[in-house]
Image (tube, rainbow, N blue to C red):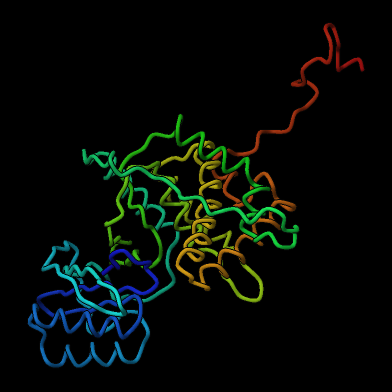
Length: 333
């Protein structure tokens, strides 16, 4: 379930599995989920116990898995429609569920491998999304005349990492091949299954370099924001290891990933400003502060993934050094 013409501040994903049970999966507000469940109930035969559990779960929690889970590894669409909730029109798609009820710590390497497999399948699918190209609406720069203290963190980060951003723009235009990609890869669209991970909500499929999906997931899902921003570098390394075990990434793609992660944070700030979402602006400012500090500490490898793509060369020894001038001999120096 996704908003039509509105930001995705609150949305729900509905899935109903026929057979041993039925499922309502919610991501967003319980109020919106309740409205969606009412719509679903008029179209799908819910049993009274399942309806009761789903209603209780929607009331109890602002979002998350609710009701009875049933594993169905071949999802199919059961129906589509639209509802009014929260002052906006929401498009609803009901499909059989692909998830698993097994709880546990996510395996980042397996997730990376599943994402690489998805990209491989999309690449060979023959689908053409060349009319849906990746583009960014850049956030408006601050008004001229302000002091440095008035500049928002995302703008400072944009400036000091401008070479990474320009590298991405150059690579996208001239080097990196585009193919169909998911386009909205974040945790709410990733579903654990008995064999790995599945992916939902393909409404933003586009033609772009596959590294975009990785950058989107890293930029939105691996920064813990509290009193201090924490980047889950070890988990990112595991994610990239799993991905590259199935689908290699070049150093150019690694540079593009870094530039994309910066642009995606700027995009979060822009959406926050355009739609007046304070949490987006605060998140973008916090992550931008991390990028600013990172520029001073680790300018050449901010995300800690370069060593996974291009191992550092062995240090030069005297026998391998080039002569400083014609006829120069290091051995006799």
